[in-house]
Image (tube, rainbow, N blue to C red; front, top):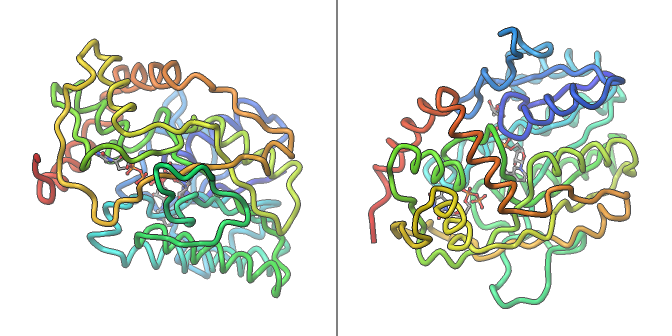
Length: 334
Ligand code: NAD
Ligand code: TYD
């Protein structure tokens, strides 16, 4: 099977590539990535310093390139996106062009060449839940996105469904909860606090810190994507989650404990405008495919992630400094 991985130099995509190469001898992987600020070329280097697979430097917004390229593959696994909510609040334009138009280009090209598409989306398309709401997101939850990021992902999902129903595209969609693990850009919550602590800086918690996220290890997400590629039904949507609901205060306390610091040794900073309160996934659609998470102990998975960042400062140092320069302009201690 020949698989093209878009966004394969980013967090989840690079973990997908490395895990696929390690576990699937029947699969040939290539990467298409524009290498934006979010990509790290080092994520795709082997111990010999060479790229672990074919890496094509190109943009999913380039319709002609995408059309030409997908013909060589049996399937496209589509991770490429602008992925950070905070950035989408500063400038929504790249979110619209990459997440919406880039996805439409892939849908068109895959439909034209009869190539299977798996579109990787997020639970944020459903908006948020109240902290005391007993329900979780299911495959029938209406879309109610709150940020330009989640609105662009919601729009992309709708376009993929439209191409399946009306234009002959063979696609599946997955909406996953918040991922953690190695190789995540230090602009995101967990690596930002971990890298900051390694640098001797106290964690920054937006607003009260009561907001809840449903954490899943990146390898569990990627195994779920393979379960969908192997056994999923074309036209279906799958919700991926690992029963990992935790408040930001709990997560930051666990990170601090990993550094032998007091659980409340952090600062509250300006809240995110429109900050979603809680996400929670009902993973029934994935359980029906026979998938279940392997990382059930969040504290152990977090400890291994902290270890990875301690061992790989070269990987994150420049990206951390660049992200902090941006945060410094818009964030103040409360
Ligand atoms: P990331 O920001 O770490 O990586 C995105 C990658 O896409 C980067 O390598 C970047 O260079 C590439 N890219 C961006 N624009 C491109 C373009 N126009 N053409 C080609 N490549 C481009 O993102 P991530 O956290 O790995 O997320 C991957 C996917 O998973 C996204 O679609 C995201 O919406 C989805 N998702 C993420 C999470 C999460 O917790 N991180 C959860 C659920 C779903
Ligand atoms: P993030 O990693 O940006 O993911 P998402 O917005 O997709 O959930 O943020 C996770 C949570 O952590 C979210 O509630 C915002 C919060 N947060 C902080 O409290 N401090 C931070 O420095 C960052 C980056 C995020």
